[in-house]
Image (cartoon, rainbow, N blue to C red; front, side, top):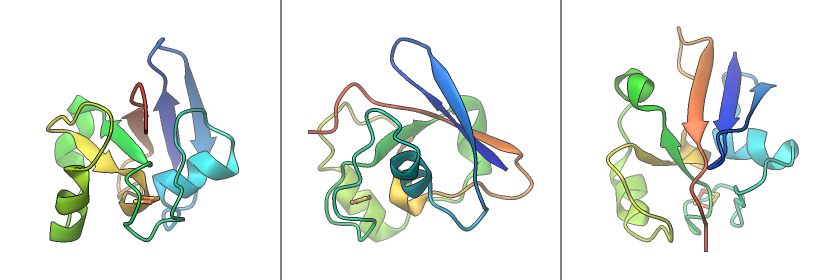
Length: 106
Ligand code: FES
């Protein structure tokens, strides 16, 4: 599967990932601008905030209570499709998950 990261200016990059790799790790490993992942994925920083593409929002599992709680601390605008990238993977059977990078993380 792949994750496509779409920036605010509409530019995008699609990256091949394993289904067990989080969106945050895929971004950090590939130098995607605008996703920091400062805590390394332990639900402590909220700098891995992304927006799941609205057409795919119902295809991804719902966030956990802990994720929802930390989502209230994101720096960018919180939307109904806001997620933390460290808690998000490409769910089967999706071949490509599209996420939008927020304007800022801190
Ligand atoms: Fe810190 Fe996701 S990487 S909360």
